[in-house]
Amino acid sequence: MTTELPSLSPCDALVAVMVAMSASDANMRTSELVAIQRMVDHAPVFAEYDDDRIRPVSQTVMALFEEEDGLDALFGLIRDALPEKLYETAYALACDVGAADGRLYEGEIALLAEIRDQLSIARLHAAAIELSAQVRHRVL
Image (tube, one colour):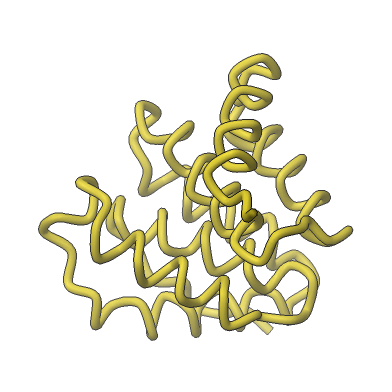
């Protein structure tokens, strides 16, 4: 079965990465969904974004996760929509979603590795981004 894939805006692609991160361990936690909404509401890259797009983008991600080659298709959509200068932004947003509930689960760790690979994030840059997400989400 071939699914007609929508084209994504750059902001849609960033939302798709965050939703994929939240869904990667098969449990979309409230803290992760709140983090996604908070980032869409406050991150400068989303200043002109219509947050009514979050639901259809989320539905696209979830539909792709149910297909055999869905992850490859998702990354194709993301790479097509996202300018290269936002690849590290996408990785940072994914790290923030992963860190939102205080720990990374196996599926999240695997998806971060896939994002690094698919978006050619330099390992040193990835480590810095990961550390910054960890320290931002620490609790007393």
